[in-house]
Length: 214
Image 1 (spheres, rainbow, N blue to C red):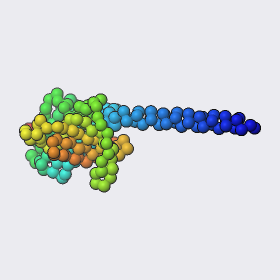
Image 2: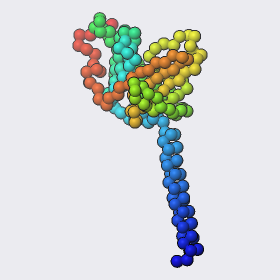
Image 3: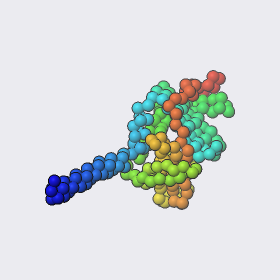
Image 4: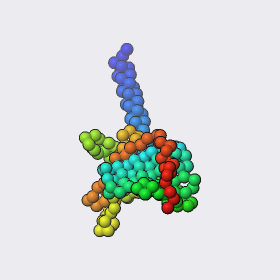
């Protein structure tokens, strides 16, 4: 084989390698860009809309948390704010406030406000622009999606002087699992730990025996 032919073959081989690497790089870039454009918040919203049964707890500390449970067309919400507890049960098209200390319940006719509580709160921001980032929480790094507004997940109250301050909400994920929600308002932050389950206890959706209507 002549020297000239060997050089030609080498050039062709080099060009082929460059083309293969270029095509592979293009596919990797497209894949990464595609993943960047997918909102995990949107995916969570769509998944919860399809679920017939699940529970969703957001907890700030022992004195501040919200527990939500849904099963078919029933919902249960237990809110603890500054140590004070409030329970709402939704079923049969009505809502019921349960007052344990008096073994009393109050009926709110034609009220299903809490039936889709979590999906309503996610719907506030779904399809909106967001930025991605990474942050360590309790020595573990999580990916987050940040939206330029506060959401209904905020447990604490915002003081009047903060009303015009910049507001942000970050949703932290472990894979596709939502694990934390952080609300940032001015120089204050509220970090909620999220616990999610696929099943709930049926007795949550029953007015306890002995309770009288108020």
